[in-house]
Image (cartoon, rainbow, N blue to C red; front, side, top):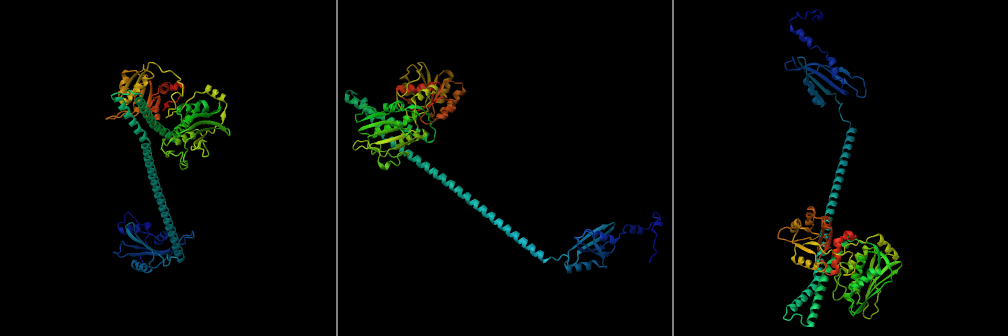
Length: 588
């Protein structure tokens, strides 16, 4: 009921009572405040204000309004002011209706207010359709997630099983290969032991007889003793040649099977370059059989002369081992415009049960006496295949001698005959270059293209003193004027070249010692590093050609060194003049 005061007429500076100042500082329009509080709400809710400043702990009601907002419309929310309600009554109603409730304390000047907001009854009651639909969606999503997890786990399990099976298969394959390799190595060792044992035993017995004959009281006094000694020497020679041929054939077989042998296809006169050369290398004085050659004159074709000669020689030597009477015939003819070579004999023939595995590796001997190395035919098959030909056994052949059906091997070169003039033209424009051969074919099969120099300084490096001594004796049989120095290892050779000048160095690969020694290839590298420019020839009983050539050697030779004068001269000329003559840097 107080009379209103005109505030504009008051002297504020002179007025000392604090209450009007406090009143002015808290004048707020409660409806505007409630409207502002519900402006951003899009639902139906009730906003209530309570003052906690001057009520001694009891909230004073300032105002309350229901806000009706519609989120689908852009119109502002409407307010409906509600009657006074204490805060405790508000708490009880919220607890009964379980409405969504929010409360916050705010400060306005020196006042502390409570703003309470809660939803109108029924506003947030869930829609059953939405609940069911949401549940279905969650259930389907859960099922999809479970199915994905199950499928993914199955996929992982399947992958792990496949990986384990693959690793097991790989391990089994490695194990099987190891077993096969062990079996092959065992078979090879058994084969070598079987094939080498007999000739070595024969050579040892014959050597003992020769030793007794020489060391006796009257050595070689009678013709009978001399003849027996010659026979024993021949036994030793044949046994050692057999072992040497066996090892060389095995090396050739390995190189051919691994495609390490190369062929040099050139125009070749079958009669003069192949068959007559093989004929000259077979025994001619045996009265039991005759060696015949049947080939038309001027039959020329493209082939590897050296490899073809090696094949024919292996086949013919097999015939020599088995034949007792009749003939060995080397024949060539043209069939269907392809050159064929036939190696025929009148021997006992090959048993039918051994023909299926005739060209297999390490096959059993072809006769009842177990003669032969057992790898010759396998080597022949590989050499013929390298020349793009084929080899077979003629099952219908008969020698015509009763009791001796004989054997005929047919080598089809699959090459047509060519004009003999082409051979002359070819050699006019090309230099023949032959690949390495591990089996010497003849002492006089090749003419020596160059003469050996009469004065030459040679260094022979080998750890075996016997081999060094025999090498010097062998060299002096053809060139006695050569100066030959010896070294037991690569280190000694390196010291010798510091104070001596050599024209030719022979270097062995492996040199044993109680201390580690340089390998032959390592010694060659060191020699080249020191500026040694003379010719170097690597030596080894193993196939170390590439290792020596890569180390800096000029050529390579398989041990043992040839002892026959013509073959030795050829080999020394090859080592000295290989680059000049266009020949291969390797020989065997």
